[in-house]
Length: 107
Image (cartoon, rainbow, N blue to C red):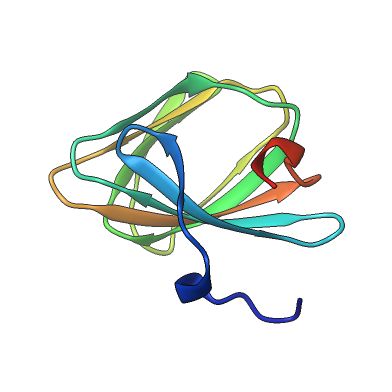
């Protein structure tokens, strides 16, 4: 698969108020995460390294106990097994997450 078409795939519900369009190769996974206004992605961790960029809206990330408000163009890197949470504000937001290795539970 060389091209990923959002229209050809149903979103996966990650948490209440957060859904993602997920595509993967052999060693990495891309996830377009759409977060509804005033939503919370609960505190969690996973063994996968995660990096991303805020595409639309603003999000408050807490990574390893450090909190920052991110706007479009801001990026983040979350090492494996580091706890993190995300909160949206009064407007919807979109982020592009990249995971390595691929999260098998999302295939």
